[in-house]
Length: 168
Image 1 (cartoon, rainbow, N blue to C red):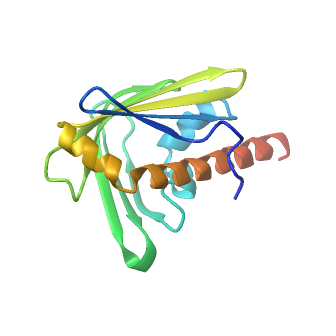
Image 2: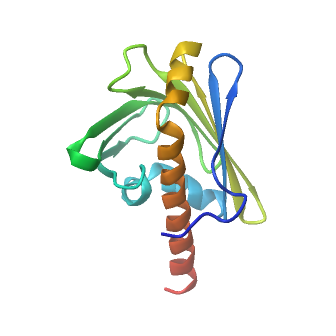
């Protein structure tokens, strides 16, 4: 696995009373990052923390379209997430709901913005929860480690895909 470039690791910040803002920069164009965030064949190659595998990946990429992920981790542990896309603007913006099977308090609204400069893309994900209690519980969970490891895997995949395009 390729380590992230210095200074490009995941940054997580609580904002307001209900939001988490995750920021990560990738050494890849926005169109490629967008594809890796939305295409099941690419999602299966990186999504999740180390030791987790995306075993179910359903994506109907259109406003009103549903998505569903089931990941399997160590000792067979499963994690399920699903939701609906509200906005799809390739390659710069996704807005979707996200429900975790283990959450009893409804969906988060997740806004992903991709901003490309000089073939580097900064991804800003704003996750808006229904209460500060849920947001704070997410902060106490291993979310930051898991998301960070997943985005490290994404960075490595993007590097591989760029190399494959240059050297078919």
